[in-house]
Length: 74
Image (cartoon, rainbow, N blue to C red):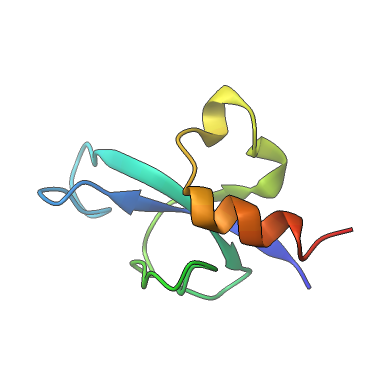
Protein backbone atom coordinates (compact mmCIF):
# COMPACT_ATOMS: atom_id res chain seq x y z
CA UNK A 1 0.00 0.00 0.00
CA UNK A 2 1.34 3.44 -0.93
CA UNK A 3 0.47 6.62 0.94
CA UNK A 4 0.83 10.35 0.36
CA UNK A 5 0.15 13.53 2.27
CA UNK A 6 -2.81 15.63 1.08
CA UNK A 7 -3.56 19.20 2.13
CA UNK A 8 -6.69 20.41 3.88
CA UNK A 9 -7.31 24.11 3.43
CA UNK A 10 -8.68 26.77 5.78
CA UNK A 11 -12.46 27.25 5.65
CA UNK A 12 -12.23 30.36 3.49
CA UNK A 13 -9.68 28.87 1.08
CA UNK A 14 -9.52 26.19 -1.61
CA UNK A 15 -6.82 24.67 -3.82
CA UNK A 16 -8.22 26.70 -6.72
CA UNK A 17 -7.37 30.02 -5.00
CA UNK A 18 -4.33 31.89 -6.17
CA UNK A 19 -2.76 31.58 -2.70
CA UNK A 20 -4.56 28.79 -0.83
CA UNK A 21 -4.18 28.74 2.97
CA UNK A 22 -3.15 25.34 4.27
CA UNK A 23 -4.85 24.21 7.47
CA UNK A 24 -3.30 20.76 8.03
CA UNK A 25 -1.76 17.81 6.17
CA UNK A 26 -3.55 14.45 6.17
CA UNK A 27 -2.37 11.00 5.13
CA UNK A 28 -4.27 9.29 2.29
CA UNK A 29 -3.72 6.25 0.14
CA UNK A 30 -2.26 7.29 -3.22
CA UNK A 31 -4.96 8.58 -5.59
CA UNK A 32 -7.65 8.58 -2.90
CA UNK A 33 -9.31 11.63 -1.37
CA UNK A 34 -10.43 10.21 1.97
CA UNK A 35 -7.87 10.70 4.72
CA UNK A 36 -7.03 7.87 7.12
CA UNK A 37 -8.90 9.84 9.80
CA UNK A 38 -12.06 9.78 7.65
CA UNK A 39 -11.99 13.39 6.44
CA UNK A 40 -12.97 13.85 2.76
CA UNK A 41 -10.43 16.07 1.04
CA UNK A 42 -10.53 18.00 -2.22
CA UNK A 43 -9.31 15.94 -5.17
CA UNK A 44 -7.38 19.00 -6.40
CA UNK A 45 -5.57 19.44 -3.08
CA UNK A 46 -1.81 19.67 -3.03
CA UNK A 47 -0.07 16.36 -2.32
CA UNK A 48 3.43 15.41 -1.26
CA UNK A 49 5.34 12.29 -0.37
CA UNK A 50 5.05 10.86 3.13
CA UNK A 51 8.83 11.41 3.29
CA UNK A 52 7.89 14.94 4.37
CA UNK A 53 6.20 13.59 7.52
CA UNK A 54 8.00 14.97 10.57
CA UNK A 55 9.79 17.70 8.62
CA UNK A 56 8.88 21.39 8.49
CA UNK A 57 7.32 20.81 5.03
CA UNK A 58 4.97 18.23 6.53
CA UNK A 59 3.64 20.32 9.41
CA UNK A 60 1.09 20.64 10.78
CA UNK A 61 -0.05 17.02 10.44
CA UNK A 62 -3.41 15.61 11.50
CA UNK A 63 -2.69 13.70 14.72
CA UNK A 64 -5.25 10.99 13.95
CA UNK A 65 -3.80 10.37 10.47
CA UNK A 66 -0.29 10.23 11.91
CA UNK A 67 -1.27 7.67 14.54
CA UNK A 68 -3.10 5.50 12.02
CA UNK A 69 -0.26 5.78 9.49
CA UNK A 70 2.46 4.55 11.86
CA UNK A 71 0.37 1.47 12.58
CA UNK A 72 -0.02 0.66 8.88
CA UNK A 73 3.56 0.96 7.62
CA UNK A 74 6.51 -1.20 8.60
